[in-house]
Image (cartoon, rainbow, N blue to C red; front, top):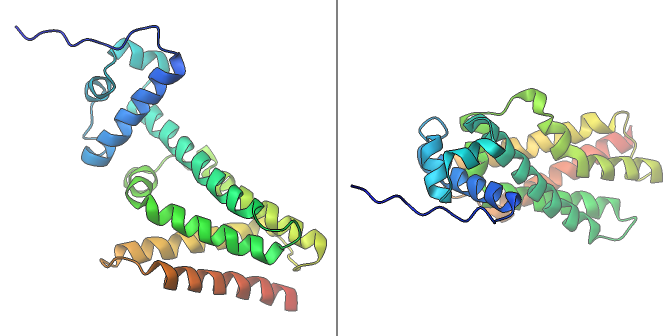
Length: 202
């Protein structure tokens, strides 16, 4: 008879058990896909019971959404840290810092991004776009107030720039060749400057 696996003690904080479940699910989703992973596999990987799983999540889809939210939170923290390192009124520098941190964040986590947002996308109603554009939107609004550029619709421009950046990173990754990070970043930065300069000239 197969011995019963020892489970992690219940004295662990709930947030630690939740993180263990999410980490296990992330590893399994990357290897087998969301549809190819079972809740039992997730709990075994976390060394927890199915009961513990259902205390934190109602389904695999809920874990998927939680993983997406965790990634976006970490991604935004990285971007915000890069932006805040620039001088308070260096709006152009803040846009460049945003583009560099965003490109690097997407390239470094390309497999995770693909699994979370492409292989089985989360529902559009989750507000993902508002989350990912928030740091850039704040910069664009601040630059507009200070006269660094003139934008009729800062949110539209933020969505345009983020979506374009994400798109060219995806295109570079799907080309089958390892992306030239420096060349890609240089072109992204030049395009950001062009967009803002064109708007300012109007």
